[in-house]
Image (cartoon, rainbow, N blue to C red; front, side, top):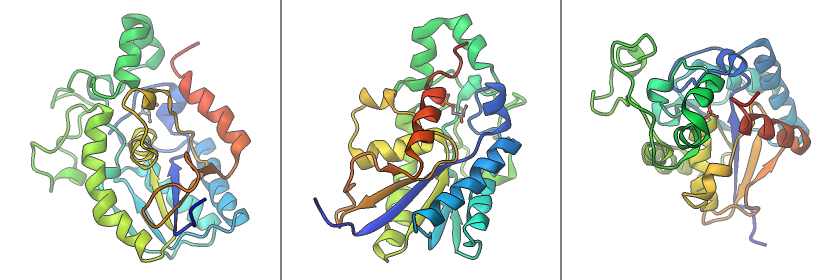
Length: 252
Ligand SMILES: O=C(O)[C@H](O)COP(=O)(O)O
């Protein structure tokens, strides 16, 4: 087994208000539920218990990830570490499905179309109109992005392509400087990063789901390859149950 050179912790935000309601979220900037806040704080305790103390934080521009990181780091007494934020870590943009009920979408369009939109690698949902109430084209957070960069919908392939430049340019240098690096992000932006780290195929990635609020530790070798494929959840039992729940979202 290769030696561990770097420590990377992936943390999906705690339960959000629209996770609770079963709505497609994407770039809509919803907050955490009280359950999500508790999950986030427990995530910090899990870091302490595992003696994995982040030296630097990277988050998306979305409050559910930003607040999850703050609550986890507060719980781990690591509030003071430096942080960088990027749209490139945002959740995948869910297009015209943003705000739609997952169960109702499954019922209306059927299993095949639902799974194509939700978990295929290269089939995005229909684009979201710029005048839709759930569009972010006029959000101040993205004002610095050229209009052609601001997504109106994304498939996972799109997320991989816009996330990897940030991985190579911002996160890898922190790892190579010897910093234990925490990435607080979202179900699909983390699926995109896990796909890259573990070399998961375009077909197999459909079967991977990320639970909320449970730190996933990747020990990486000097070539940034996982010493343990898939990494290690710091609460494996809770993760297994939560992963099953994410997989079955939309199903009664
Ligand atoms: O954006 C969302 O709806 C969720 O955070 C991720 O949803 P999914 O697990 O259905 O892709």
